[in-house]
Amino acid sequence: MTSTKNNWPKWLRDDGSVVSCTEKVKVMTENFDELKQIAQDALEDGLLMEVGENQMREALHKLVDDLINPYNKLD
Image (cartoon, rainbow, N blue to C red; front, side, top):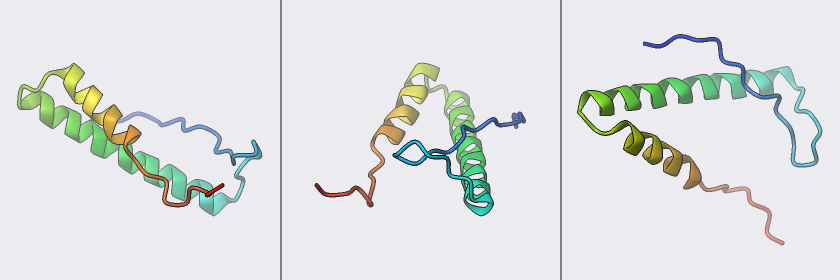
């Protein structure tokens, strides 16, 4: 298991203002810590199963690119 201190970005709203609510920032930090660990585990599993590293990284990027915003504002 790889352990490093995560330096997540300062969370911003669409208007550029900072999300400063301590609880919201805490939830975002926990979510991203969990996502990073799950992605790391998936990468390591793929490599152990002899899947190419580039293909694993591309698949992980595609997974993120394919996420859907259910709150997308309709114009």
